[in-house]
Length: 304
Image (cartoon, rainbow, N blue to C red; front, side):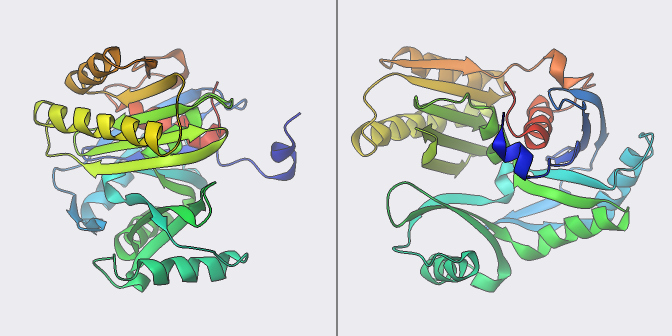
């Protein structure tokens, strides 16, 4: 029996995922263990622009047209759906904020105040979320500019779709990590972004989120250096001494090969690549498989 599922409502069975080239739709089965249907619509190149805090601007007209074309492929427009965002749209980091008030609203005010000098924008311009970490006074922060996110939500709302969970794909994919107290590392790579999340004893211990120079070949060296720094930090500061299971989520063959080769040279590190084709993902028709996994993970919570 899962008490959390008895006390809390399920997230929507519908989901949309955005990336640099397309918007993807997926509908989960009633048991929430696979996608029954998937559809995609290509978006024009440059439909969003990045800045120092993630997404800076969204082309509303391009997104409206793309979403309308996608919805025309569906039997019915969902009333509510999860929304998965590109990892490059957000900034994610661990911050030292000291003791926080117990109330969520008051705690967020303290986090914003602590980050004020670090942000390249006014705190009120950013949408922020945070998760307290086991080490006292440290939080995992995710933030992005409020205005472009609001534009996206408005586009969906204009089509009658209320957004449920709104989160970057890397956060959603972390739900795919197997349960248990053993240390696990999610490594999520696309052409723009490097994301790692270390989970140990049921809690997030370490987060790294870096922009890549673009193109798998140009990013190989940076990815390996970031993995080396991540493992060294986990060993030295987090006290990780035993084996480490790595779930690798990437559709880029060059980066996948680079991570596997790096792991082979590390003691106790075993890589488990996330399958790019799976019976749980429906017929993707050239859709981004990581986006499909993220839709499934967001709708199911945890996928075994």
